[in-house]
Length: 469
Image 1: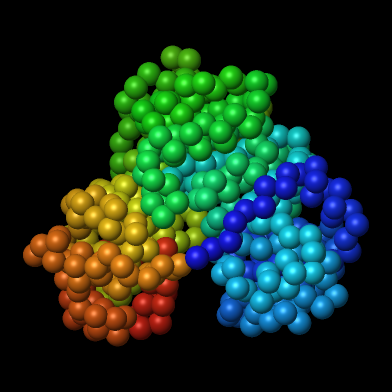
Image 2: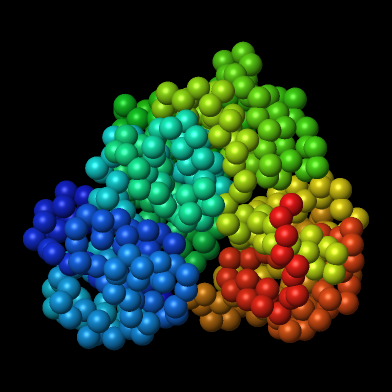
């Protein structure tokens, strides 16, 4: 069970924060939370935080002079007068309980981010059930290479930013807008990029009508003078914008759109295509990342850049320099001669599009280790999961990552393997998966390790030879 967003709004947060000198971040080790903690430190506040484990991100916080605690206790709040928390924490978290009891200013992560971004002129919010981190990273690369000096807050680390955020100028704020629990409704975009809309987060969203309404509300925040950059090929995206009063700019492949990808090819699985705008050739894009989904991400980035005064030529150059975000088909090295990639995909659509892209790369055999994320998602999208691995030759299912849930649906990695049939298997935990891979992989194969939970721990069991492509 998680806690709720606060929905205070940026004006109230600004007024109340003006009376505070110190801010404590509960769950500071997350990508977004750590970024916000550092931004807050740079704005002159005393900053502290807590998380369960020491990581590279928490060590970065400590290097910035932020006091970190690795257990949640009430005493951690001594000397602090405001608290920012992630909704993933439990309602009985000792720091959260003390803050509520003592009447400290409590702000949810999304609400606080909505406040932080109001200091920027143009605010680009990238939303959608899939591709947010990749598209946010693409936009960041385009704007950086165009010398637009963006401030960026992403859900994935980007090598050229040396992390998941970048402190730049005040003209452009590019941010990933997460829809879970309607967090993105606390944000304040002037331009909303909507990549796709479909069923997910079934522990919160219970119908497509509810989901479409949420995305509609997010786009509406931009106002009549704002912009929505929308995927014309996605019916639910366009339905979400049916009552939108701002300006709509569309992108797509299979339907007529303002920005269209044509003459698409996939040399070694990597998209190469022309972008047409208003029926005229606008630019040519060559990507070093795989999959048709990245054609859509790139089109959205080109459209957003155009609306911000960045030319097609500069956008194409930035996209050519984009090497992928961390855990988005990130090349890890080789194992028994096979290339190994790491990917965050955990929804059936993400799994399918990613593996379809790998299938175009010319490998002899495609192995996939997959860890499903939450029992509820696995149960509600079970049929979709069984159809998502068509491009794989062999699928090894790991134990489901429970996150905030307990198993009440009879879901497991073994159940998924049985449903998929002969090409799938469940062999046990990470030790057993590692032994299986060492015995099966050979040169000419590719292995994709996928999941949003703790499947990355599998790498500790693998003897991967580090190298670059």
